[in-house]
Image (cartoon, rainbow, N blue to C red; front, top):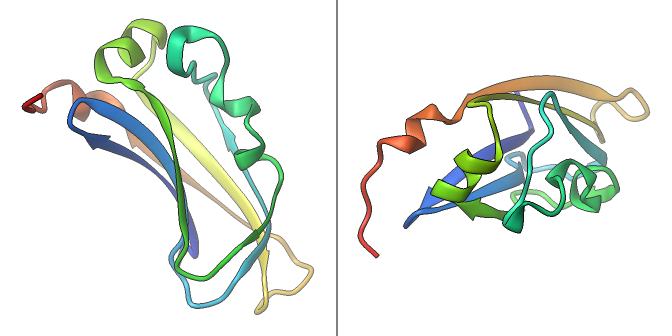
Length: 118
């Protein structure tokens, strides 16, 4: 079972990425690595470099943090992939000092066909 997940969210033509603790226990020293360099808004930096994914010391139970990626159109113009794997590592109270680690594969192709109203 995954306690901390990474998800991509599509809302009204906008793409977001979120990190969420879906458990009732806190998560510590949370890091996320992506197997692709994900170019963010305005094409000026990758989200891989964001502190949210490399320096999250504490993630409260049931907490979600999401950040804007880009408009759907700009995202697919700036990123030449549709499949991305996020690997999450963290510690929790149950495992103590032993890091938990798992990967989630996302196929973002599904967001190309979704219709929305502006």
